[in-house]
Amino acid sequence: MMKLELISFKLCPYVQRSVITLLEKAVPFDINYINLSEPPAWFLSISPTGKVPVLRVNDTVLFESAVINEYLDETHPPSLLPNNPLKKALNRAWIEFASNLLTTLYKAILCNEKDSFNHEIIILKKELEQLEKNLGDGPYFNGDTFGLLDTAYAPVFKHLSVVENIEALKLHDTLPKINRWKDTLLQRKSVRASVVDDFESLYHAYLKSNNTYLAQRM
Image (cartoon, rainbow, N blue to C red; front, top):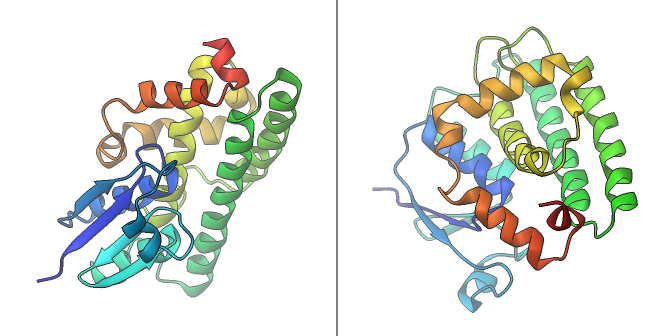
């Protein structure tokens, strides 16, 4: 019998992608939380990048969330990617774009003063505007069908919602399609269950520990 163990950090959005996929497919798995600030030696010995998520499949180790998610998608049908090769490639491209959004958001939350924070938020808004132009009528990216691409954006919106509870960014005032998509994803059962119960308080503690601008605003 295949045994799956997901190695995680409680605030990692990339781990959240894989948790959502596992929950959507109702795949049994264990989750092992580690402290990335002081990673255990056994983790560093199996993770080539020293990052999470890592998925142990019996004795084989997979890393990188996009790779893990596609493995889960291929081994646990039905697929969460479109059948059409061009649409499938387009979904993969926009999954990569979600990683760009997370990178920008991460830079913003770690800023220690207002001007640098606002600079990153301007970049984030421009990226979101690009996404808005490429969204359909929803409720998901591929219409009525929840897909692997949605698992990549749910963590973006989850992390962004915590930030917006601290600082009123008003990013969605001119992004109605993203706003509807965000609300749909954050209400989905698998997305709600993909983070720990104390996610927001842990997030606040992380901001304070890094002496961020957002911590000053809390």
